[in-house]
Image 1 (cartoon, one colour):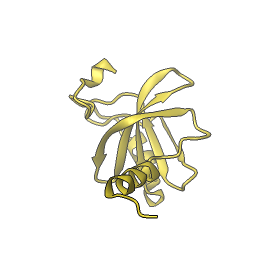
Image 2 (cartoon, rainbow, N blue to C red):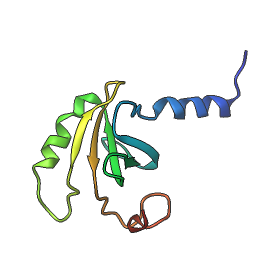
Image 3 (cartoon, helix red, strand yellow):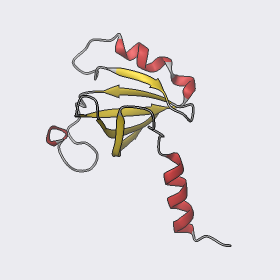
Length: 110
């Protein structure tokens, strides 16, 4: 059975999405790609609010702890971190201080 290029691309995309099963987060969309990972807009089901969720390789798990110690107006605070079933690390930021969320809508509108 042969698969078209578009089907293969779709499968690659779906396989790259983070597995948030067993977490309090529900994936909404990708906001953007950064040097150390991918940032998604997600919903915190427990607190009923939207968050920015950054997913990085497991080797970068200390990044969230380091950033959580920083207090500066230009640094978005980290509120939660943990491991995903596939071994990647996630860090959750309750406020995303960007002009736009990556989808063309102002971050303040989410």
